[in-house]
Image (cartoon, rainbow, N blue to C red; front, side):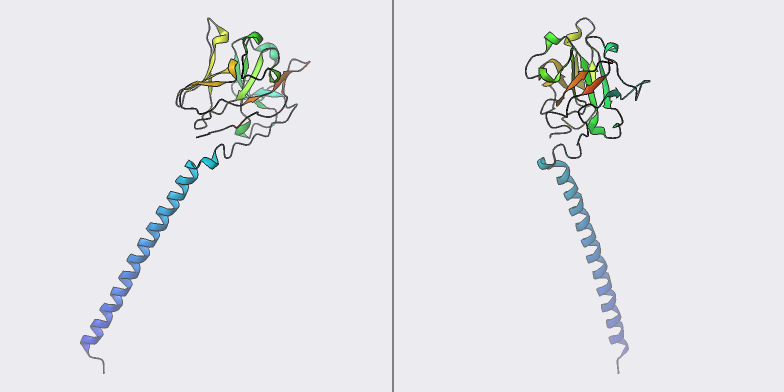
Length: 206
């Protein structure tokens, strides 16, 4: 016959086992959570993921349209931009893909220097990816009113500066590489069209 003391000991043992299982389960969940967070961090920092997710769908012949402002979605006319002007644009009908965001710039043709690919310019128009190669912010245009050809592109997130007359080379800030150039041409009806896709990687490269 089981006495009272044995029954109490048995009950305590069972409670102890239950408590240990609970504590062990809590520890396992915490470890799995920490491991998942570590994997997420490594995924963000991994060099092999440079530019991951930024895949352009621009095709030759795609017409340029405004990406911002009151004229958003409307075709851009070459005659509407003066030297030193720039606009954020998308290929017509493809604005849902953020990788297609482009900065169209008008400069003096004589102002272009290497490594700008002159064959990808037309009548002073040059275009580059509008996605900063640092952390993926959208770049902005800084116009020099007194000397339009001295205007430049800047990412105000971390102050990376790019020179559009020299292949958008990095002239300041943390961006590791230039913004990729993309070919443009002026059509007979004064609209502009892309002549191909980007010549280099787009999106964050750190």
